[in-house]
Amino acid sequence: MRAPVSLLPLALDNVVFAVGARRIIDGVSLTLERGPRTIILGPNGAGKSVLLRLCHGLLRPSAGNIRWNAPELPGGPRRQAMVFQRPVLLRRSARRNVTYALKLARIAGEEREERATEALCKVGLDALGDRYARTLSGGEQQRLALARVWALRPEILFLDEPTASLDPGATHEVENVIAAMHAAGTKIVMVTHNLGQAHRLGDEILFLHQGRLVERASAERFFQHPGSAEAAEFLEGELPW
Image (cartoon, rainbow, N blue to C red; front, side, top):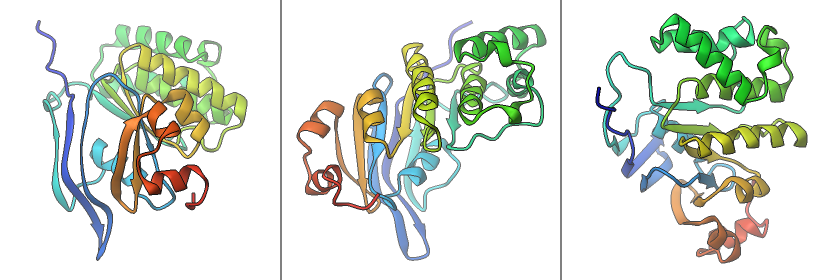
């Protein structure tokens, strides 16, 4: 059987998202390709999380178009996923959180168990599979959310500040999982307020300011030679977070 056509690239054409008279996203055009890890930066209120939700399909644009290279296959597992700052976990074991997501994706029973075991091992939770998910630590819960996604083998993963409430040790563990997912072929698109994290995980930076895409550059160029006054001020700490 032929492999499905890739979802990517994802193209945004003059996308606007407005609430009343306020444009939270104001005429953003960009294309997200396979490969580089894309980090979205910007001050508070720039529209970072809203842009992520628009890409994922949780919000519909007020104007403009958002187009995937190919649509999701009807009745098949979704090939894009999103993980939030606070993971939403079911009232069941860590393993059953993963297998339930696979059941919804219509993965057969034996394969569900195999994929769940593999995913829990990849995120370092293989010994905690029978633990009640909501009794896990914050970092463990976030790694479980990533395991649940990884088991689905998405082409693209949207991450909205996935380590914002975690301590440095838990942040490091989550970053390792994200890096491993990228190495396995998943396109990473992430919002973060942590510049160190953007350095560690980013290949390219999208910089938003007041709902507009002000700058797009490689991570190295952005941090060393920002191309806009707004980005330079942000990096110097003059714009509010």
